[in-house]
Length: 370
Ligand SMILES: [Zn+2]
Image (cartoon, rainbow, N blue to C red):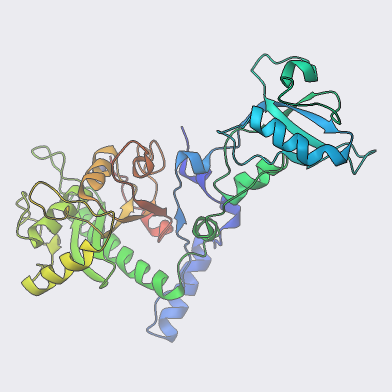
């Protein structure tokens, strides 16, 4: 099992304050000005399995280039015979790691099998396609099996063999906690505070303390606010399911009767807003529609939820085509980082971004989604 904390920066890298200290500071801050509490949390991405895994190594054969003048010819001939199509990230030539001969180059020849042993140049390089003149005795070397996707993977990979890296700057910034501006963080905090509030409303009514809010990030408008409404008669009314249904009710659809739960509310999409929203959302090239030709219920929207959604809720978010999910703290059976990463499955037809840690300390006091 991969824990959420394994995916991101070490906990020690995050700014943290002891609870008493932060409480005092918040009280001071409130007393001084009506502004928001200072941000004591950090939204960090929950990456895919591929982005989070440790670099895997495979064995390859390399050989020293004894005559440097032959390098470009050898490069051409060896690459034609062993093109390494699954390892485009591996550079063919590296400066020798032999400190006594610092300027000798080494050339990657081909991958080796799992039970690889010593091989001669004649065994590895068919002649006359390759004239091995200028190469020394082949040796085995571990090389990165797949292209690095994050800067951490790249640093690990290139320690073994020179590796190219097409950095996704957004991922690097996200992992460093620098993706969101102060203004965006203030808005995110406001939405999560609303989710915490509605979770507390649930707790007051004896329901499970999980709260969620759906926001249209284009306008900042809150479209739905809901808490867990499950009971023995309706055990599946988790906060996410409630919120998706509330958004649908705002669009004139929806299935649940949530009138007994006054803290659960939605914003009706007025005709003009609806037309505008749909026309704006049509511009999204990834947008797909259901059988009626309408966008899926949460296309382009953000969900803020106090604790990490379970597998049922995570799949419902896939089906509703949510754009981003922000949760405060993980859940033991969570499906967006803890047990599964349903938001980043290559074989599902919708993927979305997930960030954890928004108001984490407050959310940790609330119930997990199970
Ligand atoms: Zn759930």
